[in-house]
Length: 316
Length: 263
Image 1 (cartoon, rainbow over the protein chains, first blue to last red):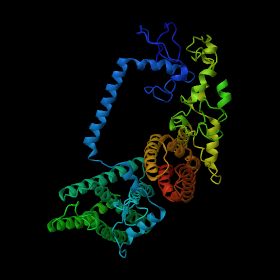
Image 2 (cartoon, rainbow over the protein chains, first blue to last red; image 1 turned 60 degrees about the vertical axis):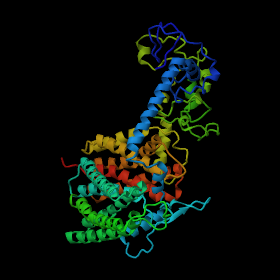
Image 3 (cartoon, one colour; image 1 turned 60 degrees about the horizontal axis):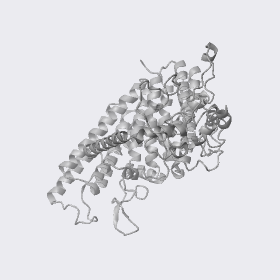
Image 4 (cartoon, chains in turn purple, green; image 1 turned 90 degrees about the vertical axis):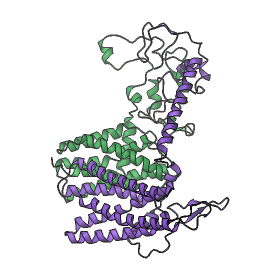
C-alpha cells in the first residue's frame, strides 16, 4: 500500500496505513502538474484514493525513482518475462493456435451456417469438395485457405461449438421431461461430453503423429470436422422424444450416421492427403504406401465415429 | 456535496466518471482508453485523466491533499459514529460503490421495453450491481417455489458469461468487448426470466402453460441482449448467429426454473 513518507505519524488517517517505523528520507516531491501521467511505474487505474489523485501520485512516484527500487523492478520484470517464455515454450506446442487463426474459424455468415447444416445432412449430391485458396491482392501468391464466410467447404468452429452446447442443453431438457432432472445433471452431461471430445482429439493427434501429418492447422480442422457429428446426435434425440417408438429413432440415427460418414470421407480427403495444387516443392511427397495408410486411417476414423455416436446416445 | 451535485445526474463535466459514457457529454472523453471509461467493478474509480481536476476541487485540502491527509478530525460521539458524516470531501457511499440507482432503473426499463431502439451508449456504465441483484431475485423466487439452487445459478452465470465473452470476441471482426460489459449486459437481460420464475411461485411450470411462458421469456431475453451485443460489436448481419448462444444461455436458467429436481 502507499504510505506517507515525510510526516510524523501521530494520528494515522483512516484511508491509508502509515508505517510506525522511521523511513529513509526521500527526495522532495516534484510539482503536482507534471507527475500525473508520466510515471510509468504506477498503474494507471485508481490505485490511490478518490480525492487525492494527482497530488499523491506525484508523491508516490518518488518511491520508484530510487535506484535500488528500479533495479528490483527490473529483476521482477525479467523474471516474469522468463516465466512467460517458459510457459509458451513448453505448453505452446500443445496449443499453438493464435488468435487470428482462431478468429478465422468463427468468421461465418448466416447463409454459410444454413447451407453447411444442409450439407452435413444431405451430402450426397454436393459436387466440388475442395477448399478454395485465398490469394493476396498484393502479390497474387497463395496465402492460405478462404474463410468459412466465402467458402462452403471450409470447416468452421461455430457450428461444432454450438452443436456441442445444444446437445448438453437438450440432454438436460429431456431428463427434465422424463422426470429425472437435477441441476447437477447439467454438469455431469457436460463433463461426459467434454471427455469424449477430448478423447477423440487425442486419438486424432495420435493418428496424425503416426502418419506424420505435421500441420497444426490441420489438427484444428480435424477437431472442427469431428464436431459436426453432434448435429446428427441432436436430431436423433429430438426424433426419439417427439415420435414415440424406438424404430424411428434408430432409422434417424442410421441415416445421420451415414450422412456424417460420407461428409467426413469427402471432406477429409483433402485434409489428410496432400493436394496437388499446393506447390509441390515445399510439401513432402508421400509414397504410395503412405497414401494407402492415410486412406485407411480416413476410413477407420469415419466409421469409428459410429461408436462415438452410439456412446453419446446410449447413455442419455 | 460537490461530487454528488456534479456527477449523479449522468455526466456534468470532466471529473469522476461516475457515468462514464458519451451519453450527454461532448467528445472530450470519447477518445480515452478502456480504463478511463470507468471499467471495473464499481465503475466509479476515476482515472488520472479524470481526476486531474479533483485536487483543485477538494474542500479544505492543502497542496492537493485530501481533507483526511491534512489532519481534519472527525467529530466524536456515538451519533457521529453511526451517522453518515465523514470527512468533508469524501464522495457519498453509493457513488463510491458505483451503484447508481437511476442508471439501473433506466437500463432495466430499456430491457423491459423490447420495441424501443437501443442506444449504443446505454451500457457504457457497465456495473454489476444490477445483474447481481437480478441473480439474487431469481434465486429467491426459485426458493419460494421449492428449489434452492443459488449455487447453480451463480455457477452457470459465471461459466456462461466467460464462454459467451470468448465467443463474442472471436466472432467480432472489427469491434471487441470486455468481460465486465458482457457480464453486465447478460445480467440485465435476465430480467424477463426473473419475472417468469416469479410466475412459478404461484403455479407449477411443468406443464404447457409453463413451457409457453418460459419460451416467451427466453425469446424476450435473447432479443434484447442480442440487440445490445449487435450494437456494441457491429455485427448487424450476424444477429441470428449472435442470438443463438444467448438463447442457449438463458435456456439453462429457464430449465432450472421449470423442472423441479428429484432428490
